[in-house]
Length: 485
Image (cartoon, rainbow, N blue to C red; front, side):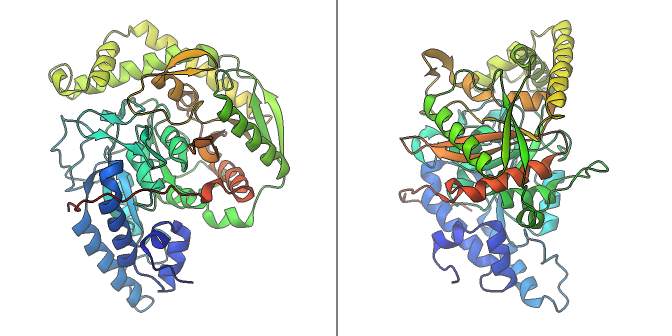
């Protein structure tokens, strides 16, 4: 049955929409109109977007529709690409030619790049329709997405809750059906944290697999670019388009292979250290249930040791602080315009100026030790299983949480299980694995060997097919508003 209503169209997967487009049962105009209707109705409550490109998206949709009608009689476009005619969004730290790129900051509030980032160019070449640029934590330097200049992004599952960040706008928009997928950045969990809190899939690929050219940096040693989508197949479709070349011998992910080649047997590592310390009981219960589901579909779980991981938090922080401060100084932003930053980002940049060279170099040695720990583990297992975050989405404005009787800052709680994969550069994915009693999503994290995205996605897809968590969508109230082009 052909989807007709706004919600039916909006919650199609990219794969489903692409199939219907090729059959000419729907058009790109239908998809763009459905997304824009949802933006008009829902974005005032969620605040996921900084720039909505309504007129531009409609023009692109009309052009795409004409190409689909012409195909196969002389179409000049790549209409067979599964992203052709699909409305997507981009985090607002990706350069987009002729479209403002703020990085969620006051400093770049009116910055309009003259060229596209590599990722924006690749998506445009695939025929994807850029619908909007998404709200984010200022300069990607935070995980709450409480932006002092553009306002907080609200979680679609509970509007008084955080979306997570810094790719919070991308995650919230995708979860709410305001776009079909997005691309964000991840320096300390900024894809996986909001994906987990918003109940979608978020992949941080192997370091260097996706180009960061034309992306406003945070900490270059840790910066990654990756896809966010409502399902594993859509995540694979986006990754395949934005990824650079894999090394020889590495298996390349392909969404068609996911359906044909589900893993029969695989081995998952259960970390003895670090990842299961201070976990909310409801999150722990969901992860334990996910582990059982993985065993039922052929997974064997065994303990693995990561002995240096507990000593990596401060060194990771030193690297991030120093590199962020260096970038902002090199651009003349800090301290010259210190008053134009939000208090949290300004304080971290100031702390970055205090990191000594010896501490930075010592941190790089810890980085190498932790990388060796992971590589030894991956000689025994196909992937490592862990929570994506130890808690469900906190209330907007909360600065601290109590986990198993211990007080911890929200920032520390959300970052600590994600930063290890940024430190080492290994690919990691967050997938929905349950809900709390309050109806808030819980995310399962799988970490794989470098260039092991194909196996990681195959395991994630097998889990997704064995459960129904990914099929649930938030129900949101209407909000009166008018769309700004």
